[in-house]
Image 1 (cartoon, rainbow over the protein chains, first blue to last red):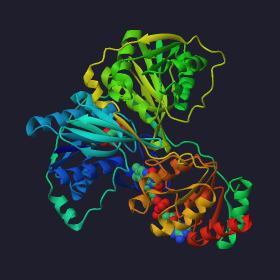
Image 2 (cartoon, chains in turn purple, cyan; image 1 turned 45 degrees about the horizontal axis):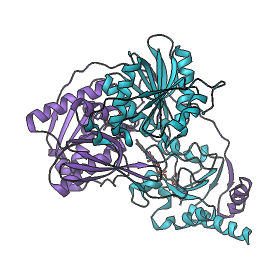
Image 3 (cartoon, protein in one colour; image 1 turned 180 degrees about the horizontal axis):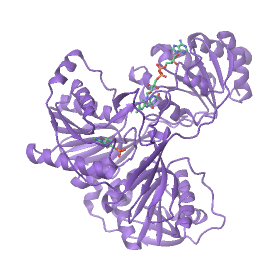
Image 4 (cartoon, each protein chain N blue to C red; image 1 turned 120 degrees about the vertical axis):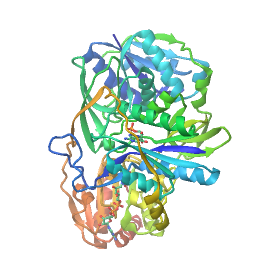
Length: 255
Length: 324
Ligand SMILES: Cc1cc2nc3c(=O)[nH]c(=O)nc-3n(C[C@H](O)[C@H](O)[C@H](O)COP(=O)(O)OP(=O)(O)OC[C@H]3O[C@@H](n4cnc5c(N)ncnc54)[C@H](O)[C@@H]3O)c2cc1C
Ligand SMILES: Nc1ncnc2c1ncn2[C@@H]1O[C@H](COP(=O)(O)O)[C@@H](O)[C@H]1O
């Protein structure tokens, strides 16, 4: 199987998200970066499929040069080849991102053969546009289903399970297929020392794309207004139990 | 000019999210000066027409085709694209559920138009619209502009409270038969698996949450006991699922479940923003944490500043004592 996974580098904020003075971006001065969680699981899923059925995993990102960090991380947990589409801006809009990823994937496929499976996250952790994977799949003329929490690879098709309230929907999608994956599909492994060393040597290709901006334009980021609550401290040890149960009684949850 | 509101139903019963979409859509249609019309896809939707009219649908488009026997994102997106062309719609909206966002993304890809997911506010005056949408699962808001011939936007779930229109609209039924290629069946649901019917994390009246501070999978036993005593369920943070102590289905937060219990007892959880967005709809929050400065403590209604391993069993014991 030839599998490609699209991942995005995002900041990893803690207690709250700070914004730059011009309101254009998340203030990342004191933050680390990570891969969107759904996509981290997509990488793990791809590696597991390649381990079980044989094959190669390519990981693709569109982002700043520093996104090499997330590509190397993917290599440290088992991805074989890495592709970076460098951009100068903080982020591209979803149409523009999708067009650039489509062009990049088409280029790789023309040179090296088609991918059997393209994996995306269900949505990116920061922008949350819920569309880049769908746009790429449509442009390539391939089927896509989002919200996937289980994949079984068959002969010429994949069985994909999508979570719904209290259960699953099942899809039988012919390959080459595209799936939007959700966290929980697996438990991503941590890199081993050997994996870390290998990741430094993994081949990384940089491919420039210049696609046009789409119709959705970011003006400003801001934080939602939050209600401030006065916290009542009920105690500093197990003797607070009585006060806690008083509260639960008052709330009517003891009935 | 026309706005289409995609409404989802289960054998004629409309989902709450669809009623939110209509409530949002009819106000937006009025502000934009277009007619508000609903689309329901698949068989069995006839029963929903009255309710759609009550919520403001001037026309109800009932789309049917052999390929539309069950949900399929590509077939639904293609149906919507054909209906947009046939009725000359200039605006399309839906609720930002998994399905709503997926089908609107399919539509946008087919029309080669932008799609703005999870809006909170939309100002449709002028050719270019101004809107506010959700980023980071709700931790952050983005003001953006939208320039497009067809404006495609979803409204974030739970932002608008569903309410019938002050006067019911006509709800004129219009049958629509799209021309769908049989190959679109490739992404139609083939089977359903039911896992649980009991209380779930998203519906439980009480959630007892545990974070990294719990320390191990085994140490969740006292949390299970307390949850059982209160008729609730156990939830957890991503630190816990990442350690493999609990299944991901227990995770509360941006990439987990949104909870809205009467009370959320959050123990050994620091309250990172991505956890908080999943917990903030709780009616009340009680934090148990050794750190008085922890984010969850400052945001809680009540807190106990102590070791959860001592406090939780003491609470369970006190409940049992009072029950006698
Ligand atoms: C894009 C993205 C999405 C994410 N999505 C989610 C999500 O959906 N859900 C989620 O939960 N996280 C999510 N996270 C992770 C999040 O940022 C935090 O890392 C995580 O929530 C921390 O979990 P925690 O509070 O259990 O651990 P910690 O932050 O380590 O906190 C542990 C807390 O336990 C307290 N404690 C320790 N020992 C005790 C004791 N004996 N008794 C009482 N208190 C004690 C400590 O004081 C501390 O406050 C996401 C992160 C990113 C970047
Ligand atoms: N800059 C990017 N680089 C690579 N993949 C991306 C990028 N942005 C989005 N994606 C992929 O598209 C999915 C959906 O993104 P979005 O439409 O922003 O919610 C993500 O989960 C990623 O898999």
